[in-house]
Length: 298
Image (cartoon, rainbow, N blue to C red; front, side):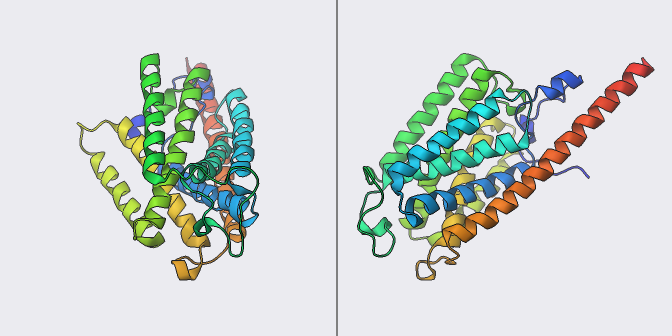
């Protein structure tokens, strides 16, 4: 059974040869893609908070460590010759974790509001820049727009199925990292400062995503824009869902803890990655078989 697609205009026509199919470096945008994206971003929120807050490493040290992990996973992805679900979604996860602590470091400070019970400090080094969500979001939006301008001026495609060059992937992953950081800021603002609470904030983001789905039917609205707006919005959905799972009941959460929530989400994500890997291999095998049959028939 074919999976239902979301924002499928991004999918270019299928490659006509096996060689072209193997060169694909990024996944198709399907319903499974968005489910895995939300799972990865939720795990990014709980894992980032686990290191920075529960283990008290602080935003500064955790950001450095997680950004280093992002660089390592990105190098593995860039060196890969074809799409590998484990490589791709590991980078998505690392950008989500790094984006969580990067956002926290930018927007928050060392006030007791953000510290664990009984803690007087959080890690070594600067505890947070304390820029606040509006200023932090403005900075991140400006950086993201600058990346898109550079991307546009480069003349390379925005359609992710057609991104196969090193420079195109570098621009893509730069936009992913910044958009995940921006999405974290949006999610934390909705959860902490808007008065909606974790569940209310999550419902608001889901409503906005449903609006984007409806806009798919409006031909005058560019689907590229819809994709990136949806990509940013799934991050605050993950952030609010992660907070809902881990925060105390008194604050509107389920108090499941960052460690337990992270382990469960990791198992779910890796299970889906394994399924995606198996499905990708089956697709490639079917393409090879089809090409062989066509060659013999010709």
